[in-house]
Length: 542
Ligand SMILES: Cc1cc2nc3c(=O)[nH]c(=O)nc-3n(C[C@H](O)[C@H](O)[C@H](O)COP(=O)(O)OP(=O)(O)OC[C@H]3O[C@@H](n4cnc5c(N)ncnc54)[C@H](O)[C@@H]3O)c2cc1C
Image (cartoon, rainbow, N blue to C red; front, side, top):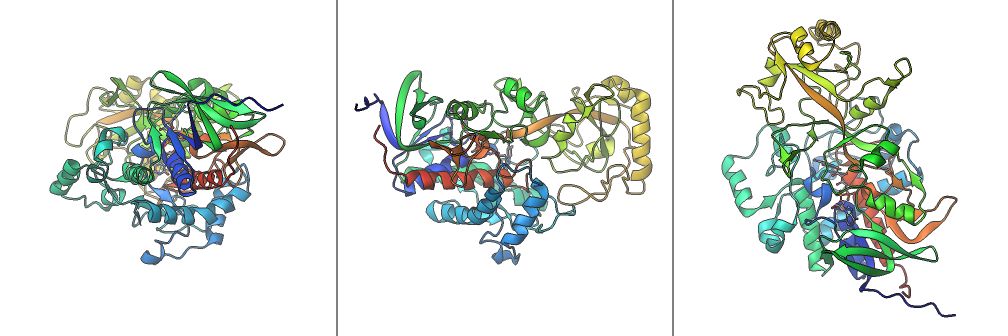
């Protein structure tokens, strides 16, 4: 008996759900493969977390490295990643797929769109101070050349998301400019602002979007995917909304889930991570991709993992009238230390941001509780406060009322509800060692993000304290994918017609974040492979 044909409101060859780095890479490759592509974005703006990010993409063996005289090899890259992922990766073969495909991905996007990447000079692999083979002093972390959104996408200026968190990094400067200590002069910043020339993640999204528009790809905003349409186990379409209108969209060749992680769904975070996280991403990533993949019977992997960071809350930085989590500030800086609720140090404060919040998940069987319940407290002195901006607090300005301060460590402990004896002991011990530039307890003089910075005593009153929480850039557990980002089933095989990439998929690196740009490189590489593979599939009768 012939199957009844479905009633569709629209049919595309490939439907891409989401509009971050994974999604736009998939959409571009699918369009270049000859597919009619429809992008569905839930938010009113394009770009997701990617658009507000640093836009750094970590690509071992990329073509730009030769230009700055850094040699790289497949072997070095694999040795480096494997030393960090330590077997936590869901599928060891995907590490090789990543290393082989990432340079091809970035070269293709640079050729096919106005995206231009440059190595962030002096930006080493994060684990350079560790005993990890294959690290490089610079060259793998690429950042976008600022993109003139005002000139190139005038009709899209308000529909592309821009920078929000990380107030300590400029919204109109590149990472290299910020790190160099020689930011562009105010006239140049004003020029970029008036012409709407955007750096970082906004440049990445702007350039990819320009490529999609040149190819006539249809992009809907305010169009959340709600359900997959599944026939005989194969994904053949998506139920979505546009405005408030429910629509059924058919997909002749495939559906790519690239709609972020589940960091903004507290129940999912508690179920899989086990403790609350404070996301620094925009609030739309609530696990829709995970639920859709589960609906199709996906095999899940890496569910307890996330891209980590310390998070802080500044009550003066508001989104929709409410304070929202920010990247931590000054963590690991010389005149600082971090203690838990019991007043004890528990971590090398300067470790890479991915690793720091995982220490909040340590269980203490003697307390029958987490050893380091959130929040912990970052303690610092006046010399540090005067040396750098910390969230919205500026050097030279009085500390605002929301930053607890006191003339002595014991008084500070009382103000923040910590045992004064314990905090005093911790600071005294830290200071004794820091006076010699050492940290025998947590090796801060040897290990830190990219380089070790010798600690110095916290001894210049008044003293300050800021709560610090386990934060995330996005979760990275989800459907386990194969080399072409096809969603796999438990027991073997794939879900026909379904792909996943970026934070909607299980991270190919397992728990690891190899270096600055590791999350976007992973998202864009598997998005690239998903789009290319989906476009090459034969049309299915819908
Ligand atoms: C401030 C900041 C700086 C960062 N800097 C870097 C960096 O420099 N380099 C790096 O590698 N990583 C960085 N990260 C992390 C990185 O931005 C993310 O890991 C990455 O952008 C994830 O990309 P994605 O495509 O998977 O998801 P996203 O970019 O989050 O895109 C997902 C999209 O899906 C949409 N969506 C959700 N549900 C639905 C639905 N049901 N239907 C349709 N659409 C839906 C969302 O609205 C969103 O637009 C940073 C993160 C932050 C917060």
